[in-house]
Length: 229
Image 1 (cartoon, rainbow, N blue to C red):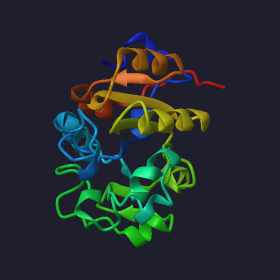
Image 2 (tube, rainbow, N blue to C red):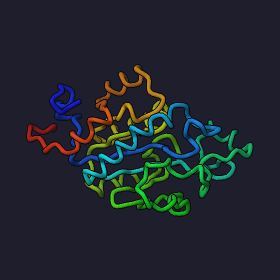
Image 3 (cartoon, one colour):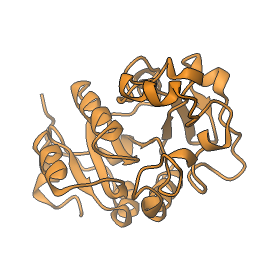
Image 4 (cartoon, helix red, strand yellow):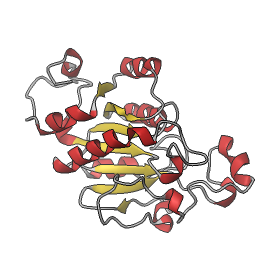
């Protein structure tokens, strides 16, 4: 996909890649395909996701890794998860290996996730362009610092990728749209994709792109044109 495609010319929804940030959702060891409670298809999207994060860093654009940290007993989890977590199952437990980002997603030499910092509602810096943010529910904006962080970074466009489109990425995309962010989805870098879901997201102004197109999109000069009011 290139910016010459008709959908990208809508001045009210067209992504501004020069002022964009990448949002990765729940790309953690315990959610990979092979994990006991993992999400099928998530390990398989890692190559495209690694290309995606690399393209954003190469362009000097922010990358925000939104993560889950389920406390013992599941008190900070969605209701549908609490019965499982109350049974003693540990998934993305704070400080555990399973809570850490998947290999190759954060910068080389990045610190481990800091559960105390993240659970307090503050972002964690993982590298020159990378940050982590904890979310307690499906959507990345619910009771989090994400919107404040993005506004501080001067971002008006969000590009989403990560784990399990029907749940957390979809909820986060809707929340982003409600906050008037321009939104794109890297469809080959998100798991559990269906044609119907992509059609529905396109219907609310989400632009669908491929990982291999990002490098060109992120380095294109800003296009002059009439603004949306």
